[in-house]
Amino acid sequence: MVRAARLLLELAVAKGGLVLTPAGALKRVDVWHVFDQTEWPGHDKATTLEMNKVINEDDAYGVLFTRIVLQAAGLLRKRSGVLKATKASKALLAPEAAPALLAEMFEAVFWKVNLQDFDRNPIEFWPQHHMGVILWSLSVAAHDWSSAGSLMESCTIMDTLDQVQRPDLPEYAMVSRVLRPLAWLGLLESRKQKRHSGRGFDEDFRNGPLFGQLLEFEVEMKGAEGARH
Image (cartoon, rainbow, N blue to C red; front, side, top):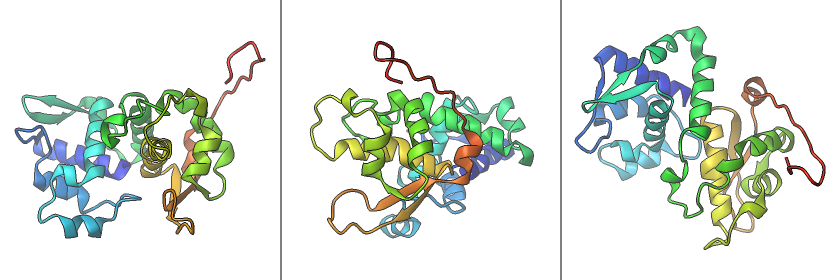
């Protein structure tokens, strides 16, 4: 995602802005510029190309996601149908500023964007409303390859969930709102894993080197009368 962000910001600077379509999306030529040079865990580029004669922004989910996150972070601003790179974003294009750009993207993904807008999952906002707890739990629980289901059970506060329409929706939310974005940011590693039961997502996750480099925690455990975390 950081590579995609840099490509979009560099393009916005070079062109003096990215002209949007009447529907508010990136133009195909700009989408392709980023799509062609990036890979997205969990999304197969070859399949996307087979299914679409042309690549619109809605077809390139990672590009769409990155563009919206850049806007939420205040690094791209829309003016009269054109996305302009802000002064802050231009400073982040220096090679040595890559860690700062990652930090800006990370904060925007989980605290400035409602990830429910992307997955159409009817579970409202869960588990995004306790991301701090989840991240600390992942730092402890995700050293080895683990399924999304097991990470959901060990790293989220399950009893904050109301009744759900389908039993697979919480795990789907864990993937689309936590594990997939973290993998795209480079904090988690992912691998395909065939399930013998045929149930659950066919992907395992574990912490990558960047996880510990980007995040540190101050944890205060309180007694039974205090907060749970």
